[in-house]
Image (cartoon, rainbow, N blue to C red; front, side, top):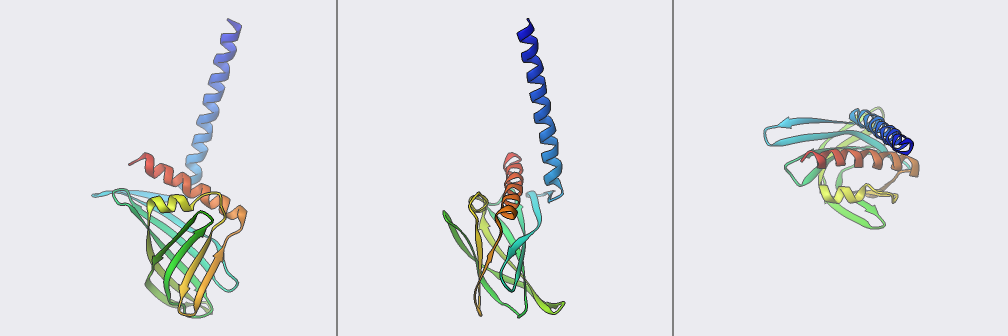
Length: 174
């Protein structure tokens, strides 16, 4: 009888721990994305992600996914000292290498540098593979030559865990 009571208490405590963890998990990611029910599915928007850097430029991006589609729109901004026209974007890791054509949304001067905004698409399944443990790099192909952006290990760990959790929410709600 005592063993059954102890087991029941342990189970209740484990369940409470899981529920507390899950509620923290939900709150933690909820401020990083939004979802909106559309006529043709649910639209998910993952807010601005950053931390990729090169010597002279910054790279920031966001992700948009419609649940009835198979691809994710990756919109990105490049902040550089010169006006940069991007042709394509390449996502690279040891076990992953995908390139996609980019289209310009706009280019404008901003605080002594240039802000270029571009859009591209990747398959949802490909982006799932991109967000993992291995440290990635992003290469933009511009007229002035390739521009390589890297991210430090800690920032990538945080960013990939966040996006993977949001991707799990998306998959669970399909």
